[in-house]
Image 1 (cartoon, helix red, strand yellow):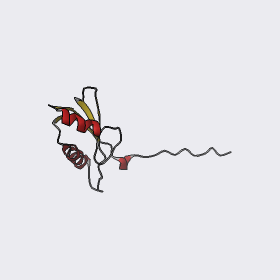
Image 2 (tube, helix red, strand yellow):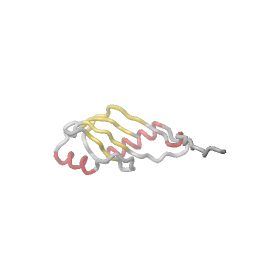
Image 3 (cartoon, helix red, strand yellow):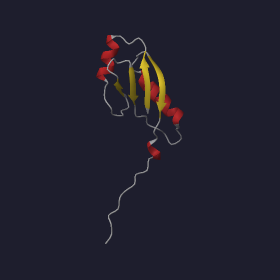
Image 4 (cartoon, one colour):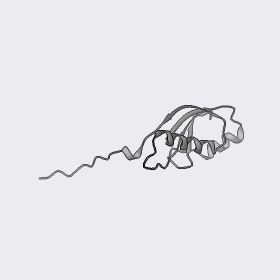
Length: 96
């Protein structure tokens, strides 16, 4: 899950929280990448999905992880990549 947004009224303590949770990895707690002024952000979060879970459940899980940081924000866009649908193409060695 990726959530793109902007912070609304972020104070110095909030900036410190965002900087401490910085990174580009997808984790269950979530990580932030942000602009230099720490006003716009991308929140990356890994959400465990059950067999019947879809995009709505994943979005709710990611928003819950973002809420745990207790920061004032506005969501601009949410993106979902369902890893269950990713297919890996393997290259087979050429036969002679």
